[in-house]
Length: 68
Image 1 (cartoon, rainbow, N blue to C red):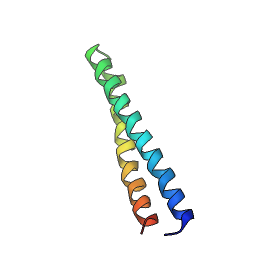
Image 2: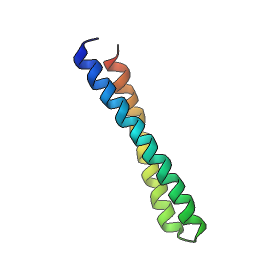
Image 3: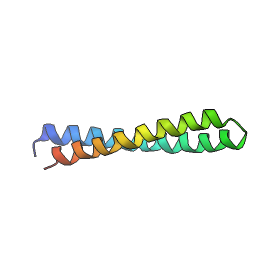
């Protein structure tokens, strides 16, 4: 693996870790909002989480390819 690919893979990994942290925060906030009766807002947050989850697999795949 080239230094260039390693740098890109490392940057993607940091972005994915940040994305996971943001996802966890959104999940906690969605739960809090739902408990207070704003189910539409909570459902929108859950939809956003689904997008984050779907994109995380693509990022992980790119990291694996770069690190080969």
